[in-house]
Length: 189
Image (cartoon, rainbow, N blue to C red; front, side, top):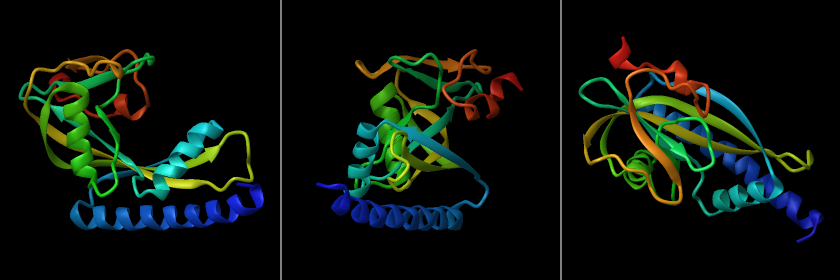
């Protein structure tokens, strides 16, 4: 597809993605108005941009994770293969899946843990841009981080994706993104 035919389609998709994120945020606020909105800009390789563009076009926009605590107040974190820092378990939302369903599924797949979603902690509003082409329109995406409680399962990493899974009573030395160390660790309070 040439730039002349691809760009109008991408601009239309970008506008639709922003509208969809705004709709989701409105729906989330109706259910739980106490969450923090976090704005992020992700500069992506052209291939990564194309993958996310295709996911958005297919209705699979966004992702979700869970800030899970156990009865002792420890927080379950994962370290992805190839990453140094720790983060809450989570991943991409599939088409037709709610953010809460995606969060619970991703936690199960990544950690072998079952959790209950108890509220919304953060909504990360993403601006996805092609790092090599400023003329490509910015796409909008949403990642919802839920609060949750541990329900069961022996934590173990998903082979080929997750390097490690562990309960943390206090902040890890290395975090994948800043919000991980800014969130509460009830066991240490």
